Structures are given as C-alpha cells and as structure tokens.
Amino acid sequence: MYMKILGIETSCDETSAAVVSSDGRNFEVKSNVISSQIKIHAKYGGVVPEVAARIHVEAILPVVEKALGSGGMEKIDAIAVAAGPGLITSLLVGNETARILSWFLKKPLVALNHMEAHIYANWLMNKKINFPALCLVVSGGHTELILMRGHGKYKVIGETRDDAAGECFDKTAKILGLGYPGGPAIAAAADKLKNKNEKLKIELPRPMMDSPDFDFSFSGLKTAVLYATRDLKNKYKMEEIIPAMAYEIQEAIVDVLMAKTIKAAKKYKVKTVMLAGGVSANKRLRERFSGAMKKELPGVDWNIPDFKYCTDNAAMVAAAGFFHAAKKDFTPWQKLKVDPNWEL
Ligand code: KG4
Ligand code: ZN
Image (cartoon, rainbow, N blue to C red; front, side, top):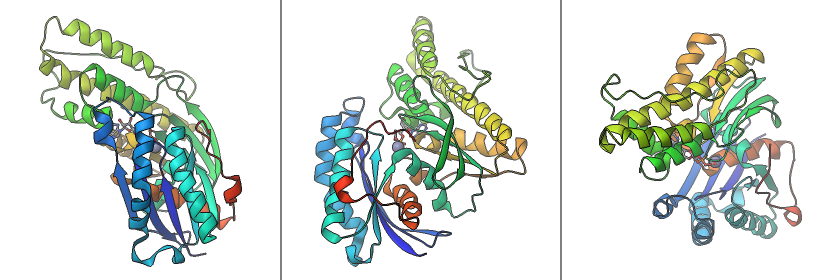
C-alpha cells in the first residue's frame, strides 16, 4: 500500500517536519526539515524546557509548511507525531499542531513513541530488515537494547540503571569544559589525540561490562572522570588532559555498548542488528559496530541510519508512522495525549 506520511517531531530541542512516502518496502524522504535550537541552549549548557517550547511555537508552522512544499496537505495520507517520551512543554507544541491539522484537514493521526521513531530511522536506509531484530538505541535520555519480533513488537531486554550514554557524553563534556551537546564535542576532542601512548595514560572503568544481564550504568564513569580530571590537573594542563580523557571516555562508553549488544545478538539469535538514537552518530561507535558485526556475527545483517537520521528528526517519525497507518492504528484527534514518560 503506497502512502505519504507527514511526520512531526518536537520532543526536545529540534523542531522538525518531514514527508516520507513508502510502499512498505522502499522509503523515500521527500523532505526532512529540521530547525535546531542547539545554539541557543548551548549558552545555558543544556536544554531549558521553557525556552525550547517557546522556540518550537515560533518554528513549527514554517517548518511544516516548508516540509509540505508546493504540493501542500492534499496529498498526505496521514499525520504522525512523536507523543513521548520527551519534555512535556516541547511535546505539546508538535502534538497540538498535529491535532489541529488532523481535525481541520480530516487526515488520520498516528501518535507514536519517540524511541520507536529512532528505531525506524533504520528503515529509511532501504535495506531488508529481517526479524527477530535487535536495536541498540542510544540517545540523550535513553540507552536500551530492544528486541523486535515484528513491526510494533518490542521487548526491552536491557536498559540503563542510571544515566544514558548520551547523558554521559554530555556530563563528562561539561566536566572538561567542552560545549553542549557533549557527544560531538567529546568525539572532536578525542580525534585530536595524536599519540595514544603519550605520557598521559588514563584508564576509566567499563561499568557493568561483564555483568550477566544486558543492563548498563554510566553514572560511575562520570564520577571517575571528575576525580581523574581533578587529580591530573595538579600535573598537567587542561589542553593535555582533554584529548586523552575524551578519547578514553569514548572508548569506555563504546566498549560497554558493543560488548552488551554483541552478547545480546548472540543470545537471542537475531537476524538483524541495528543502531539508533543521537549517540549512533558517533563515528567511533559506528566503526566499532560494523567491525564487531563482521568479525563476530558474519552471518547476521546489520544496519546503521545515515548521520542525519540519528539525531532527532521527523523523517524517522514518518517512517514509523507508515507502519501504524498500514495497520490503521490511528488515534482520533480528540484522544491524542502526550506522555513525557512513555516507555516502549
Ligand atoms: O536522539 P537525540 O538527538 O535526542 C534525544 O532523544 O535525546 O540524542 C541526543 C544525544 C546527546 O546526548 C548528544 O550528546 C548525543 O546524542 N550525540 C552524540 C553525537 N551526536 C549526538 N554522542 C556521541 N557522538 C556524537 N557524534
Ligand atoms: Zn531522540
């Protein structure tokens, strides 16, 4: 069934709208407009919810209008919106917009989970994804290993017990005095480390790497970075500490993520392994993931979304929305509710 879906995403600090068409096999991103607030929040060192909501209000209609292009609303079959998890004030802007458009234009509405949308960024790559599949979803607020036995069938087999991987990047970047968001800042600083065996050797813990479950814990890593940086400052300059520390932070996070992902893929004998979420934009994680898949699970397919579909965007919402719409899994606009704590 061929359908064109308008996706809307305002869970955190990106205002995004996209039009994606699909017949269920191939996905075509007709537009994916993202208006990022990162520069504004960078001044505060993190997202300020009230500020984010106000900017979403200003940005949302121009972003939707641009995404729709000259064809306008008439050719859209359904509207999909991420209704949670996220910041409630941010979510409300996208959801009220989706509700009004659905009511006024009489187009069916799909309310879906933001983490589910991250997973469906993988379908935008148009590679065959066979079930059962495993997805490592790593974002600013979540770190989860999700087993999928079919479309819409999710089982969280592991998750973080404290901070998310993205949060760990963000918080350790703050300790090092790097900017927000911390993930790209840590990655860039780590790239500057020319010689890995320099005098400044840092060894951070790999929390829960060998635990028998598939859970994660990253708050201890943040504390370890805080103390190690404080001690090293007595002997070295911050310019020397930062690249070595950033390199080791990235390695520690990636080591733990990869160890658990490969172990889970083996245990559940999955046919496809996927990456998703903002942290999957990390070059080192992508390299290590593809390397580990080739080496340790040569018969298993794997997939990583393009960089532009890793961090928050509405194309992924539209892709997930397609599968709901195909099953006529709609939410009447009268019943649309945001849920800032919605668990998959
Ligand atoms: O999925 P996302 O855009 O928003 C949430 O749903 O949270 O993820 C944002 C997170 C932030 O913590 C950010 O630091 C991290 O993704 N991130 C990265 C990179 N790009 C974004 N982490 C590591 N390396 C990157 N290149
Ligand atoms: Zn996200």
